[in-house]
Image (cartoon, rainbow, N blue to C red; front, side):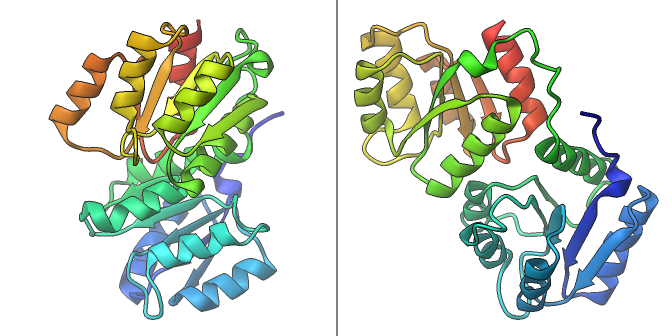
Length: 264
């Protein structure tokens, strides 16, 4: 199926500042995106989204009546809206503030001011979520792969599973932490483990070390998906034996390239 051009995307922008709203609108118009609706508060935007579902929601972090976190969680809580791609544009840099949004599954988190090229890339990621490239991994029998997704966030598990499903992977099982994953790995065979880093009971590093040192499936590819920014921790994860590390937001193109490298 031929992909739609980014110019055909229908986008809802939620931005309390009239000036910032005009800037975002103009940047989208520069990319030939004309189907843009602008709202200044979260609830009005949500009510409109329920009536006419857009291809992408772009919002600021701080709205008059809620935060960007509240907005994306509102989308994810509605079965009709949970798959709508979401992008945050914010000057917020706090890890604690941004991590819940990363866990909920976002197309991108862009700073203010943002680069036009980053916005363009995020729009292409949106198209990728809506209409994944079915030929990019044609040499891999994706429908035969059995994948275990490990993450303590139910939203993150859903988002990661959705991206993998869109890529053509049908056999996906999930675990809430490393300890639960260990029990599943001992009882089943998997072709790939996709795991978060920060988890209770047994984190991603401990799970990776267990698989590499104690499991009968010690050669299984392990893809770490994490918002962790601490270089020393990421280095420890690499030394533990992960096959690849992918950032949250979980971009389809990055995942596709990782799968190509891991499974070829």
